[in-house]
Figure 1 (tube, chains in turn blue, brown, yellow, cyan):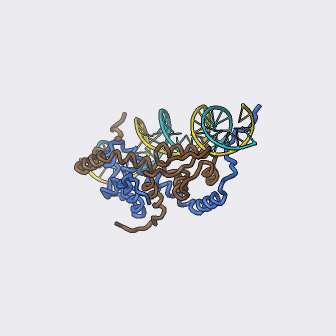
Figure 2: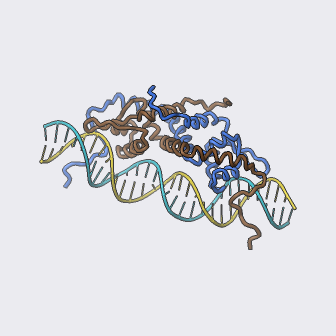
Figure 3: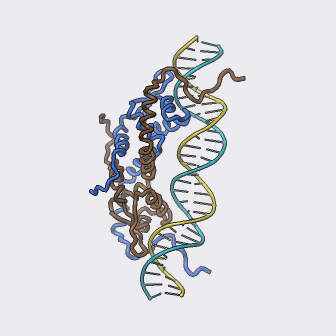
Length: 128
Length: 128
DNA sequence: TCAGTATTTAAGGACTTGCTTAAATAAATT
DNA sequence: AATTTATTTAAGCAAGTCCTTAAATACTGA
């Protein structure tokens, strides 16, 4: 027979309920922003897609075939990554004959540039 | 009987092999950076973890219990997210009695601030 | 020392991811 | 019209994610 229940939550006395409520309200007001940003970060948070975005920014436009050659991956694998980026409106396409050129969507250039700029951030101790 | 094989790769004549090789070399030299950045972005690319990082930055430090209250999630669920962030050295801990305070690791403050600053980026058409 | 509290760990399961190969679609070439 | 080429789509599968609940660990205080 159990003498006491194992607790799944904390029932502490000294919680700062003002802080808890303030934080809850704050998050609630930014909920959409969090979901949107997490989506973009999640797409960029894959080495293959990050490289694709880097390449598209660097080279302006590339076809799936080029990307496949550069990354040494099968065309379908590349195509499926491109589809995700296109569905999220991060990249856009331009057709020319049988070739389809992908590039970073104008609306997303700024956030993608910012993400890629994180490269240059030294892992420093600078406080601010 | 098959008249021709379905192709998995492109065998085009007009590929710019200089471009392909230049891109390959460039990616190769940055391979480590891509993996590292993709890891951080992947961790931040989850709405729960993104909120946790935001909260830790905003409030300086919080215990799993507080975070659980704020996010309305079970403590084990929160604890598992914190473990991932800690394993990646993005957050660090300080023990005080039975309470464990989490905060953003000094070395990671800069990149996390930059990621959270992406919030403020308007989805504009600005070209640059 | 025993019961309470804060946290982590473990096991499980539903769901998602990221590849593979085969096939479909669409445009160009002969 | 038939073949070649570039791309997408579909199906399948191994591995990973993110929660759940139960249990373990660790510190506190009567």
